[in-house]
Structure formats: C-alpha cells, structure tokens
Length: 390
Ligand SMILES: Nc1nc2c(c(=O)[nH]1)N[C@H]1C(S)=C(S)[C@@H](COP(=O)(O)OP(=O)(O)OC[C@H]3O[C@@H](n4cnc5c(N)ncnc54)[C@H](O)[C@@H]3O)O[C@H]1N2
Ligand code: MOO
Image (cartoon, rainbow, N blue to C red; front, side, top):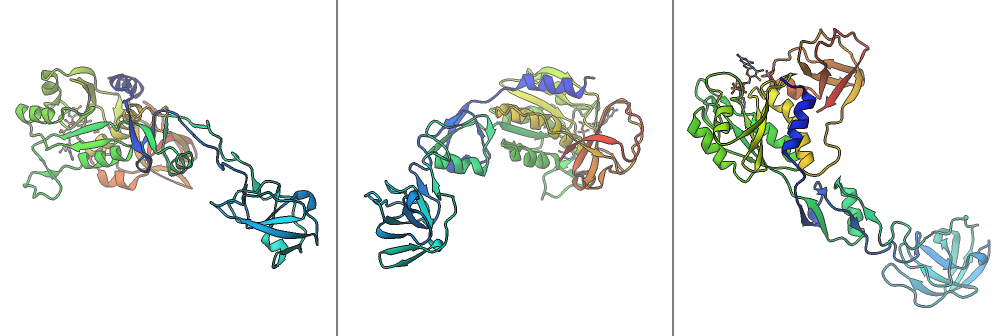
C-alpha cells in the first residue's frame, strides 16, 4: 500500500494539461484561461470626468469666480472646441475633458444662471478627472492560468477581448458497477439500492469544470463491464465506482487489465478509500474508486479534483488544507491516514461520531475532512488539527 502523497504523484503522471480552445467572452466565466490575454486599448481612452459638473482651468478656481458656459461634453459625445480663459464647459460623468480644461467643478459647488456660472462653495483639491489609461493601458495583460471569475469577464470586456482562450474541458466517464444498483427514480428490487456515487461525483466534477458522462450501470459480469468501458471511449478520464475490493464479484481490475489497462498502483494507506486503483487504458487515464459512497466522494476530493485541475492547466491543484482548534477529543488513529468527516464552526472542529464509510447522511452534515496521520495519538480539546473544507 502506498501513501496518499505517492498516490497523488502517480495520478498526476496519468494526466496532463489539455489543449486550448476559444470561447465567446460571454461563455468564459468558470473556464480556465490558458493563455495570457492583452488589452488592445487604454481605459479610459481619454481623460474623463468622474463627476457631473463644469470643466474649467484649475488656476481660475476660487470661491465666487465666474465663468461663461460655452458648450457641453457628454459621455459618448465630446465638446470639440477648447476651454479658454474665463470659460466653462458643461460636463457629465464619463465624458471626455475638453482641451484647455484640467479641473471639473462639481455641480453642487456652483450656481448657474443662463450661460453664467459662479462658484458658490470652495471646491476641494480633487480635480475630478480620470487620466487616460488610469485603469489599464493597451498592452496590459491578464496572466494565465486562472479560473475566470465574473470580475475577469468584466475586465476582458473592457479590454475589448471578444474571444477567450481557455483549456478544453476534461471529459470524464463515470461507471457505477454492481448488480445491487438501480438509477434514482427506478423501482429497486428487495436487495437493491440506488446508485448515489455517480451523481455526487458528477456534481463535484462538473463544479470543477469537467464534462461528466454518467454511463449505464455495469452489472457484475465481465461482458457488462467490457460494454461499459467501450461506452467510455473518447473520455480523458474513466472512473469506475465499486468492484475494487477482493470479493468474487469485484471484477474491475481483471476486466480493465484484460482490456489493456496499465496499472499504476492499487491500494493506498488511507481511510476511507483503501482499494483505490489507477492506470492508463487506451488514450485515457483510469481511476477505480471504492464503492462505499463516502470512500468514493473522499477520493473525489483528494484525487479526482486535483486531476481535473491539472488537466485544466491550473497551478494550484492540491486542495487547500486549513487548521482549526479541536472542539471535541479524538481517539488514537490506526495505521492508515484518516480523513474524518467533521463539522467546523467558529467554536472549532469536531469529528462526527460515526465514521463508517457508507454513511452519506453524515457526509452531507459535515463541512470538513479532518486529517489524521497514521498512528496519530489521541488528541484533546484545544489542540490544532489540519482539515480540508468540503
Ligand atoms: N475482505 C475485505 N473486504 C473488504 C475490504 C478488504 O480490504 N477486505 N475493503 C473494504 C473497503 S475499505 C471498501 S471501501 C470496500 C470497497 O469495495 P468495492 O470497491 O469492491 O465496492 P463494492 O463491493 O462494489 O461496494 C461497496 C459498497 O458500496 C456500495 N456501492 C457501490 N457502488 C455504489 C454506487 N454507485 N452508489 C451507491 N452505493 C454503491 C455497494 O452496494 C456496497 O455496499 O470493500 C470493503 N470490503
Ligand atoms: O475505503 Mo473503505 O472506505 O476504508 O471503507
């Protein structure tokens, strides 16, 4: 059995960054920028007023000074002339500041009668002018790789970047295995349960930016599993769930190897998730997850999510671990690294009472995986521990 860290390194060897494709700006949110993009213009492209008021010469600004209003500069329609001595131009927020002016009096500090403008309140020192290019200049770049957020979309729009280079989405095929499984909504027989893992993992992986294909459930026969692997063709990553352990019906390893899977490792020193397997099959990476629902989801957080981030070309691929103070004691840990379902609040972190790897109700109540090193001694309230937020 290998460690979690070694397993992750081997899994990273199975996948690499996917090629770039271009998408319309409006569809780029949530994708991963794969190449730097560069502004083709200054913003603002001209010195612009930041207030509604009057553009004047700054050395003429003093209480009770009077000006003649000679024109108007609106956003999208500039004043074509220049502001001369004793003159003012009516100006609005976002409008180009006319030549000759270097100060905008805010409307509230003035009184206007016809064309005659008087300063009625002492203006502040602020010119109320945004210099050309103050936000960004032509040639300013947004650096890749990064997950594109709404703020990035707004910035790229302002930079006049209508098409965005992004990493192609990884395609992941999910295969549930087992005669006991039926799909949600179907009528289970007396010895059957509902396939839950595929749906939890689909939600998780799509949230990370993958395209997920849920394939029909494979029965516990060689031919049914072979059919499922056939349907998975074209995926970047094939994930099986269940059938990974040592039972007579645990066929995933034999069938995948029969189809040419080159195994990278099998079994890790981790709880839950011990019978994890991985390798390459055809042009795809393959991961065989244990069937226990919590084991499958925990392996999703710890292994599949970093693999997806790596395929997307992100630099930060490992889950962000944090620390918290224990608000409940912990017993001594066994020989495997343990990822305990836990609840973290302002008061600290507490492991859930029942850590059985079949309990989805416990997983759904928890918001953290509390990490225990192999043979970690019993811990008291107040001690600091590491956890992964989920
Ligand atoms: N003799 C041993 N038995 C087991 C060992 C072992 O080392 N020696 N390991 C245990 C551990 S740890 C795990 S984890 C499980 C893993 O078993 P499999 O990967 O072979 O999974 P299955 O036997 O197919 O299923 C386990 C359990 O999970 C349910 N299941 C499976 N797929 C789904 C699904 N898509 N949705 C919901 N639930 C699913 C299945 O019905 C079983 O209850 O093996 C232990 N045994
Ligand atoms: O991986 Mo198993 O989940 O330890 O139950």
